[in-house]
Amino acid sequence: MFTAALAATMVMLASPVAALEAAPAPAQSPAIEETAVAGFPQARLYRLAGSEKRPVVVILAGAEGGVEASQRFGPLLARLGYAAVGLPYYSPDWGSYGPPQQFPDLPGSFIDIRVDQLDALRQTLAGQAGVDSERFALFAGSKGSEFALIAASHYPWVDAVVAYAPSDLVWEGWGMEMLEAEGTRSSFALDGKPLPFMPYRGFVDGLLAGPAADLRAIHENGRADHPAREAAARIPVEKFQGRLMVIAGDRDQLWNSGRMARNIVASREAAGLPTTALLYPDAGHDLAGGSAEPRDDPRGGGTPDANAKARADAWPKMVEFLKDALRP
Image 1 (tube, rainbow, N blue to C red):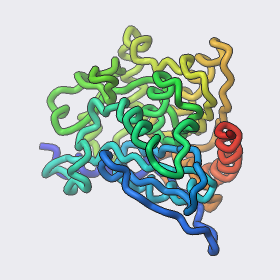
Image 2: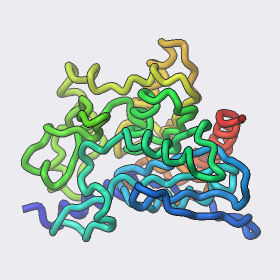
Image 3: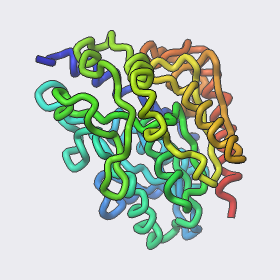
């Protein structure tokens, strides 16, 4: 039934949704240690060699899942002086309709992803040499930002969040089991309970449309269809007392991250909490990383030049934000 159209749409969801791409490493970069994190499949800890205890920055990728974001940003954040932890939490599995699942030890559906695994991760890191788990930040993109903001709104030990292309809501989940059951499952769960969510409109139709699917409209129309569900689905970002930076482009074509970033700022302002907001009117979804080189991203929106300028402007500000937020 879904044949190649499903696989094509999953490629569209995967590659730009949280395209976290970093600048190349310096030619003479210091040695970085990479170690597995016990109990967390595919998770890796990156840090500069030595005994110094370094603050934690957890990397949360988006709908592409897998380890790519961890591998790109782990070494870069380690060079900035952090104990960077790539925490893969999803690896797409669309059965015979898509490529083989890359990491079978990770969830294959984006349904009821466990937010509380971050709490378990923090406890594990507390016993790790060279890690200061009392200073704890989240570095996330797109669906990863949704994850990060839910966690920060629940756990008081999160000190800082950097959220690229964020969401102000918890959204509907997806996976093979959802093809005949749209609107019934959440993306995230906390303490064993699925979180209230905002349904999409036309997700399966979008799968059938392949690359022609309007993912922004699927989100926006779903939100318009269910105003009574917005309050329950809203991430209570005003409960997060730490430091927050949101980075978004108004021409994001994967979801309306500009609108959602402004909603986040408004909720926190109403509670007397500051938010550092970097909002770029002409930019799209692909804003993470230090590279100012223009690159095509027709699905994510924005022009190559606008996206490149936004990345070049945002990256050094993000570096300073984390440095200030995680000072001893």
